Image 1 (tube, rainbow, N blue to C red):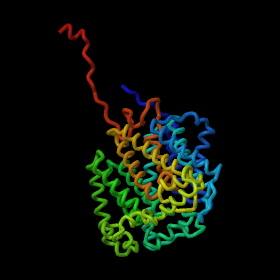
Image 2 (image 1 turned 30 degrees about the vertical axis):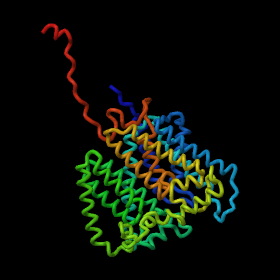
Image 3 (image 1 turned 180 degrees about the vertical axis):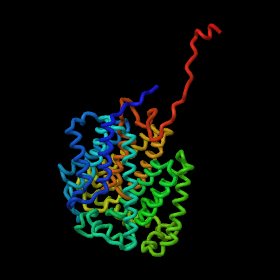
Image 4 (image 1 turned 135 degrees about the horizontal axis):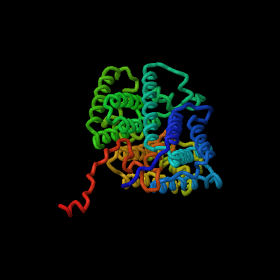
Length: 448
């Protein structure tokens, strides 16, 4: 019989507090121009854990070796463009090196912090539930903020969450089209985290029909108000597949049906008052004219697309190793294009390797436990979302996403390979042990 690794109550208590703080910090405001709450929290927590002597404790799964190895390699290639910057003879200016460095370094620091906590004895199952709970509650609250914004209630406080309020943000321009993303600067960021929150809620509240229905209602309303194509075309379909295919579907279907009915009545009552109705209706198949693909991708695909312009510029400047952490001041809007600008064709290969390593690692470790479909749905979401946003490195998204990936796939708590939720007795829902009658001594059979 495989023994369940012992966890320290003290380490678990502190581990939950730290991951709750990191998750909440991802939804925090800007503290200064270019300085987010999550940056202070993530780098500060990692520094404190290292000073406490936990830097030798981390243990990683085989999936982490490949995924983090590819991400570290991308980091190394991006360094080339800083040490030996290629000559820029285009009209595009170089980007912010510090911001680009943070985009790639932050995921590594998040995983390292989680690994140190688990290595010190913190229970990853309880930390996973804590991260999911904060994410679901924060995105439900953000949906309420979006509802108030759509109703015409304005607040200067939102500017502190969007570029420190120093200039007109992307969210400000999006609201002119009736797209309300709450605290997020870009509707795409909101779409990714609404989608992550839906998956987290389906995992977290699978036995609580009423609570799940209320949460799905709020998250659905928030996702629709953002008119995020990542949520509507990627996250929502994956969430529906999760409801239908994962075990425990009866309760999930009941909650999803109740939430759908509530969404329908809400839309019937307030749809005509929403100024983003026309923009959202264009996403319906057949409503976008002859260029439905261009509409779905916001003009990012095609000969004259924004992504094609970035690719053409990089082909002329530094196709092999890219421009370094700073990149160029062009719209990335795609994980692979960001990798191309920052680390060239090598970066594109490495970014693909990160996603492929996560997918293969999940396929090899999948099981009947509820964490398995959650992890698989999350990886599928990240692959789809990366076509419209650098989902692995985007502001706010990166911290939450990598906290979940670390706890689900990358960090192990004992000396055995694989994920912690494959161990007997681990996971969200523990199975009752099967009672096996003791064997009858041989002497008894001999006497008989």
